[in-house]
Length: 143
Image (tube, rainbow, N blue to C red; front, side, top):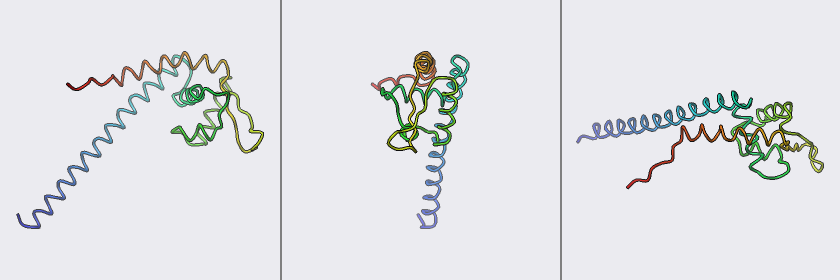
């Protein structure tokens, strides 16, 4: 095969593999957006929580400690520091978390889940798991 045809064939193969890669990415985004929208709607309707508010509560409860620094929560979430701060402010307004300053580092802010926050999280967890199970079935083993 002439060199110019080999190069053209190689570029076409690259374009096809790039198209497949972009296609997989778009498929992943579609899947994520579908689940996120269903989660947001179900959590809001049943528990008055956005998905971000639930995820924030979930990270706090999952940590199983009295309080966590905002920076630690932000490092493990998809929210920016400012978006997390707004989310925590909404949760605090509804009595689900409490914020406090770090005594050793006045710039640090701690967040703690209240008893109301734990109750709301426990109820919302059932909804969260139900939606995830609907969209993310257990893979069947290949025989």
